[in-house]
Length: 308
Ligand code: HSE
Image (cartoon, rainbow, N blue to C red):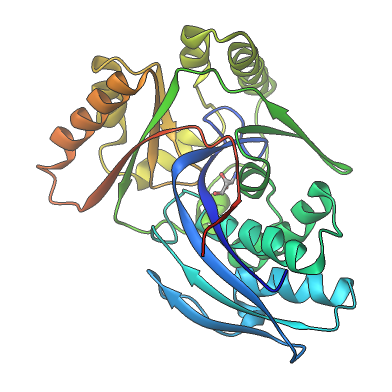
């Protein structure tokens, strides 16, 4: 294979209670990227649209991943890439993860599929480190594997794919302000009381159980976060009101997407998810803050090849 065009999904990390351990991919929102082999053994970013990101490969999440993979595999070729961002970085929707996972998937194809999915995840985590200072696996794993993922362990790295209930839909509001993941991680306490930990892991168990058994109400009740949300919600204008109107419109539950500022809600069925979008729209339209709204099924395919 000499060239490949891909779609790499936006992702919602944490899913409220699963800080750094859970995430899911969106079905309809994501970036497009194009990669081709070149005879010069270099990584060159030829075009970036939709965001202002570094062209220098070693400063760009996708570039860092491609450089690491070409070096590790002793490839006798280089790569040129185009990155077409469909939503802003700093959104809490895994923008750097979409770039990193997309590069890992595409460069592996150009190399002849030499790496396993877990190896691709390790490469993609290097892109996350370049973009936000830590090797976080949740967003990149959801982008690569698709659907819901649980990072069962970071050392050794282990990812478990969790089934998606067929009627589960997400509504996402993305206020057009930027929250740096690095900064949003610094506000969290280094230690939490054991009662908080108990409440948190009980909700993770409830969420996993609900996803396996299609128990939509249990999924909704489990979207409670005692670890990150209390410290991060202050960065999101009208967060509590968003949750209130989502519930009133019929959502199962609502939480911060990744490190914010995006907020997601789950609903049973696309119609209710659209009602929730209308409720978000009504609330935010009077705030003077720009925003984007998305209603999407869960992206069970993850990164995928698309037609050139
Ligand atoms: N789990 C990470 C965090 C995701 O919440 O900081 C970053 O988008």
